[in-house]
Length: 260
Image 1 (cartoon, rainbow, N blue to C red):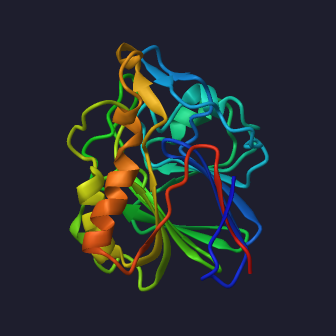
Image 2: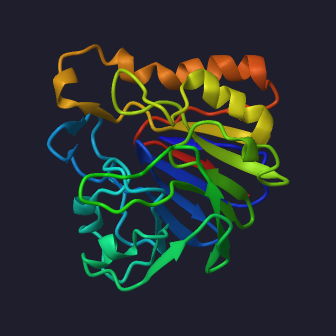
């Protein structure tokens, strides 16, 4: 489905592939975030929604926010050409280099990487330790994408003080509003807390992510509404806390497209 947003001056699109996986196209650069491109993650997380028929292999850069299994999925990375540039938190390089990737850039908070006409800036995240089984400890980060638009990909995070003043002018915020099960642990934003981030970030447009895609195998027979309700609750809270911010709910497989 094609959605349009007319308050920006230049072409721009976001395909919500699901969970924290998005294909962002801006300034002629194709950016893939935290790719989860299969039917399951490990042996205990399944995909609820069909994988969109979108070409993710021909991308200019892949951004990895942290090493948790639902954000750094090695089988998904194996689907990509090994020449694809990867931007990962410091300490994560050796994990992806073992797969044969040859262009790996490790970043710390505040670092900037230029890909074509897009400047990628590494931001803080409040997600605790990204220690995962058999993986090194690394920081959890988010990313600001600076081009004709400014886009914030939060990765996975709870509120943190630096959200206020993170960037002078923010066009689009891609904010996590849930997780991959019926409950949330620490270091996440639920719909209310994600809405509380809006007065701090002051985006023109906010798109909820990190919902409705993955579920534990044990939830196979649970009501789907347990996974599909969070973005709508986020929109309700946003109308109360940040009425000037436009909220756009994109289901997995949908595309937000701005025409200049």
